Image (cartoon, rainbow, N blue to C red; front, side):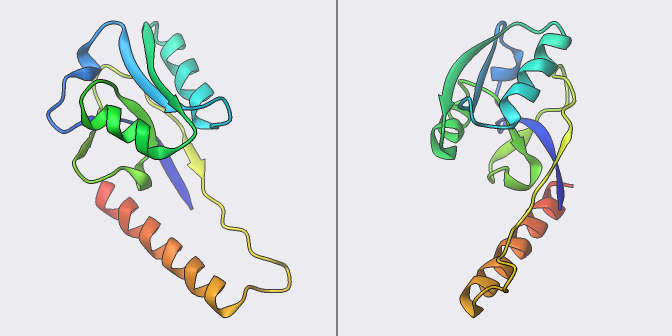
Length: 128
C-alpha cells in the first residue's frame, strides 16, 4: 500500500503559523525525517525541533498540545488532528510493506496481517 506523507497539526491549531516552524519528527532512524526537513529547506522555511523521538506517542503529544506540527503518513493520522494544506510544502508518498515468512505465516500471524491491512485501508479512506 502507498500512503502520502502529510503535515499534521492540532485541530484548529496555530503551530503551523509560527516562525520558525516548530516540528516534531522521528529520530535519526525515521525515513520520513530527512524528507520532511529537505522539503522545508527547499521551500525556504525556517524550523526548530520541538521533539525527536523513536516512538509515536511523544510526537503526537506535541502536536495535540499545538506546540508543533509533524510529518505523518496519512494512514496513521490520529483522530482529532488536521492535515495542513497551506503554507507547508507537499511531501511524497511512502510504500508500506508487510513481510511474512516465505514458508507462510501461522494462523495467528495471518489474522494479524489481515487486521493491519484492514485498519490501514480504513484510515487511508477516512483521510482521503
